Length: 67
Image (tube, rainbow, N blue to C red):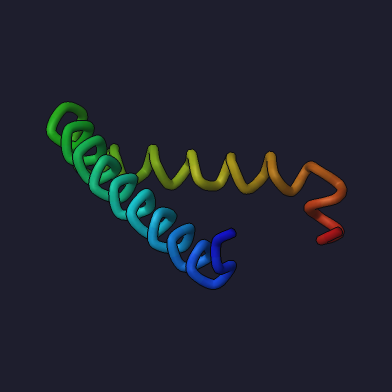
């Protein structure tokens, strides 16, 4: 019914739009957080959050073995 290549292109465009929207929302949230608690504390807090997220992900055996 639909050409598969056109459907794939549309899905890629949708994903790119979602990523752009998420980035803009992230900028707003980080800017708001930085004005409330300060820029340096925001950077440190978010860096720790990233490290904790990576640590939790690496605790999953299938992720660690890259299955």
